[in-house]
Image 1: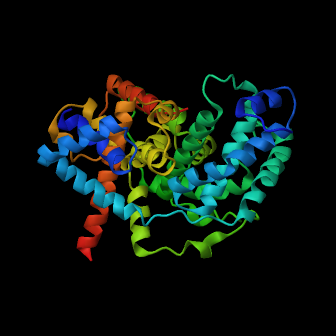
Image 2: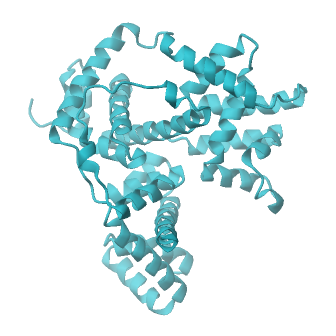
Image 3: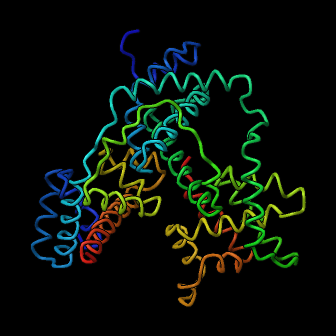
Length: 211
Length: 185
């Protein structure tokens, strides 16, 4: 086995999850490969540190509360399940304040049709894959009032959302060639996507979606 | 009710026996809670996730056709609800509306006092929370739940090779984070 292959076995080697054959292969390889030995040392140190994260359970009484509360919610939802009353009035005020806050922050994009195309794809990505109730609620409430469009709210929301997501960042960087964008902020990258690239982003998001 | 396997419980539910759902909840509630807790590192959020998972399960049980194992399906729902919770939290943080969202917590056991954590444990938890979503999911399911790669592959719809790579990088990142923190002190 080669280094690239072996290193992915190391954690299972450390935790004792390898069968005898693989265990022997790893052991032999470690004797002759300093790179894998370094990987092993790092993973072993991490594993030792992980021993401190032992499970502290809630009391057994907690588990006895789960089913009654699920049943209570099911009873409550039966009459109104999947009704349109998804967002109750108590959300409205905070969402209004949030939207106004966003207005102050958001740079209103120009109105060219090509930009609309780009934003549509990203907007769809957010709607389909992030499924965030807060963003949807803000959009639903305020797009119709022309205070702020769906696209503006959602594209800003997703841009910020993606900034902390290294997986997506990597996917974006992979699809747009060129080292010069490595340090570019994701907001900038998103606004620079053409339609094809945006579709590719949708595809990446789709692969990432697990249900 | 005698001891039924998961699929028998589902089939029983589909024939109208709602008690089968209750049994599924009892059977998996602890597992679901702990997966959720590993994702969010917070009891209240984990509790919300548990509720949401079982509501989804209830609504979807009639459509379950057994293409995957019940527990694989249930874990997939748990991972998705957990990831969605994290995403929502990120956007709430962005919108800075948390202060307006002062949800009263439902009656539940508050185990906060049981969660006095050592500095090292907090470091580890922080390192896990900082992992990218997919690496975090793989790490939790492999390291804590000790699921076979084949099962994780079905849950996350990722190749076994990809899972091993994610697992490797996740543990490396945790180690690096802890090392950096120790050097900084």
